[in-house]
Image (tube, rainbow, N blue to C red; front, side, top):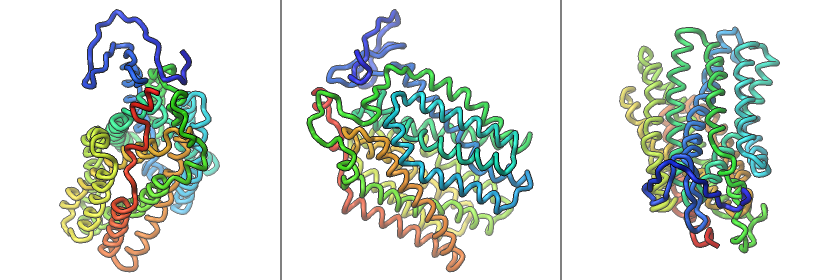
Length: 445
């Protein structure tokens, strides 16, 4: 049976069978395929994907604010640090669509992901070993380029393993493990940086690439259906005539959703930096602790709620959850504009957790809805990722300018208004996409 046909071979096992919540018969090593072409990946592959995402989040955390801290200790100027961060951001932005196209063209998403992880590990080692300008610039560029394929690769492997009918719940689980990985990594690397040195953060990042690759190897290649990874229809269902790229790009749901994601990032990206500045001005003694709590609280909410978001998306549809996400962001902006107590701002960050939990699942899920059947699922992810990058880049500039000219309260009101615009766009323009994706009948042929 070939890899693209959507069925796994039925392998014999001496271990006892049991049924999961969906009634699927599983074995500890192999899950038997269900009727109607629904994939049944083994527990080994599913657990491997869990831990791959967890450790990958650990690895990526090492390239956050720790870069600025480390380069500052190496006597770099703020202009030089800003240039490094800007180059990484520009490469990350322009590489979104090429990264998705690479995954769509790949014959093995696992191999591409492994090469990207190895590249990121080497970049971390380069930061630690030779913090000189040419090496750091090259490392920042390669890290950003590698990251552009990892996001689409995770979504593609997930879709290839579980199929479009189960992708919502799977994406929720992905978001949970990514959030847990971010939280654990921030604690470990912060402790290492405090007890040892800021250089040790990048050595830890390099070492974490090893368990990441081990976890990736646990995902069985034969269980990752290459056709589903690329968002292709099964051969027996390819009668809709909508598999060309131009048809995908012209789809109203994709255009409207990309615009809504741009508005999301335009409203969201500068809220945390502005809030951190406000907290520092009001309570400088406790600013570091309060900002740390403001980061941890949303991560905990994401870890708690993401699987529920994935399940509810299949029951309620996508639009109600998108409205909840934009509504929470709007309320958060309004509260930041009016709340003066720095300690209450930590409680306000609960709304950030709601928004993050919704969109961590909804972005790849809606792209899967719209692009499944086109064969360009990962390129569509790149289109939405480009909108994400543009919105985030404009947000920091716009938020900072308004804050400097008119004050933080005005800036937060403006960001809340942008979030409300996104909510209205979803409410009045965005169509429901749950039924655009492949149905069980189509999967059955």
